Image (cartoon, rainbow, N blue to C red; front, side, top):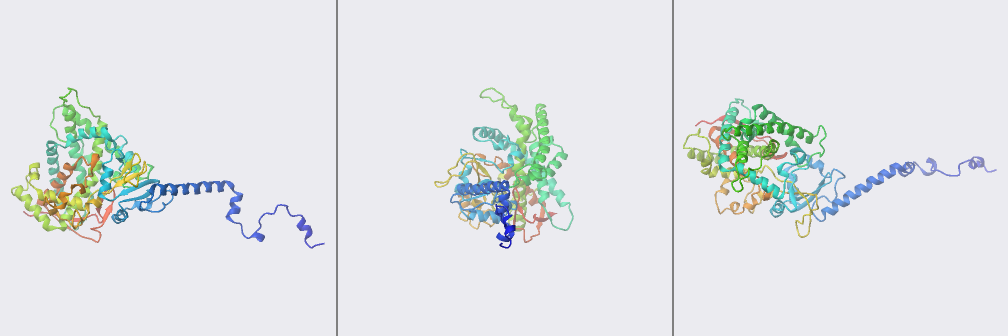
Length: 515
């Protein structure tokens, strides 16, 4: 009898892998015993392969990552955007591609393609950022397109006539003087960031211009305190769902607070105008415009609800708060770092004001201050508050003869490269207001490159208002204050939030100016 024969005969007829005969169990052994897990993994791998395939099919030959990180794409890089990172993207090609959370994005860096995106309403529409409609409300006028948008914009244009601007300018001048007196009253010997100071100053100015006496001081403070939640949520990339604890959720709650106050201001404005009071703010001007009769057909103009008027004011706050704050902060920094240019501004201010620094700014005076206006224009060029404006391709967009942006993709025109084109602006990083004083300078002869306020049907509606406000803020500062800039290694570095700011917060100290 063969030794061990009996035990061999009693073994099962089906031989299973054994540790001794075949080595340790493999992953395939495990999956073979758990077919449900194998099916799930197969589905996941198939989805990931499909994701990469779709990304590469949309990207075609555009510069950009050859494959996308599963699900999140470039989300991690986009959480902390930098000017250097954007510059690298722009340098990769006139058009380049990437993906974030399955959102396919095409970025344009050249002036040609940037302008084409903004001037192609048949194919593109502003989408701001992915969460913007949740934050500003989907029926906000800024998201309208075509004739509906043009008609709405025509109504709002009446709020920025020279007559209306003169009313707003009076408010701006008064608040600038009041605010600067508060800044100068700080006797601390140390320099401090002006980020919060300027944002609060700008918010108060905006709300007083827009709402006048119809909004209480407590509301101005509350909106200013909460508006930062909206700013953080309007960064180019954010977690897309409005879950408690996310930036988008916080922004929606802040919007609800602001809208309650703005609707109340619209209601009070209507009452004031019906009682025959003087126009004191933008809402009053709007109500008066609505109350007039259209002589061509004898019908009353459209009456806007309190909610609609509040939505428009909210959109104006969105357009002005961070962009204007960025512009004013960089203006202070530029002038502190260029005392020779600040001296020229002061000379012009005293000359036009006939030596009386207490005379309020007027539109007629601004007309006689070309150097001040050139400084504002150059400051906005060298440090444009908004470097890019996201659009959405609402249908396939043949942006070039060889490439079509897929429908529902985000397509982003970049403003910064056009403003830094050395062919148009020699020594583009140099702060040189003189380039705007010579009609034959290439800067003046190529207005299509000055994209600070965008282009096309959605170009900023408040261009004159913005430049007037910044000129007034700078003009009043120049004649009432001295300010010293504490430079740090991060003074010239850019912090990208929704707009751009000096990375160190711009450390300034203000003192009264000796006349």
